[in-house]
Amino acid sequence: MQLEQLKTEDIPQVARWNVKLHEDEGSIPMTIESAEIRLRKWFADDSFQVLIITVDGQPVGYLVYQVVPATPDIRGSVESIYVRQFYIIRKARRCGYGKNAIELFTQQVLNDRQPLCLDVKVSNPGGQRFWESLGFVAEHVAYTRESLL
Image (cartoon, rainbow, N blue to C red; front, top):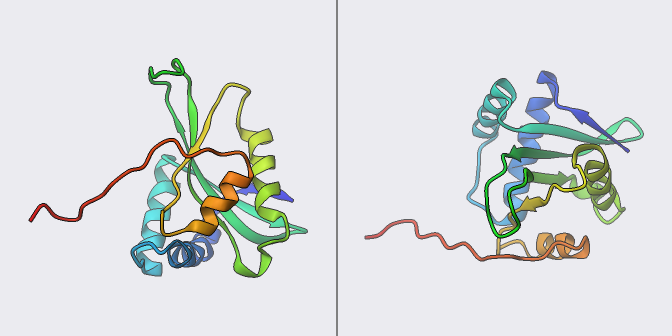
């Protein structure tokens, strides 16, 4: 397994995967075009890093992350890594690729003191079980209301 930096030519494929991720999460539907526009924006300004997950040279998913600067909180002031998106293609799931990708990501990107943070939709119980199986613990519940009217 390898983690490879996103290349411009990878953007259309990752955009298609992003649409499938939204479907799997039960998120608001997204078009391929809007996913591609967002990925190109991230790619251009380095606000997020995008890694392609490959097994034997074949892409099986992707991971989008951001380095979050240190801010004082109850744990002190440490830089953290925020995983914005993580996706393994449907036919490659339950093969250990997701777990292996996160372990490899942890070894290659994180330092010993950086917490790894992410959000999981409540409409995605499978995702919740996956992250909990890797030792992640829910810290808070966020609420959203579309309108105050």
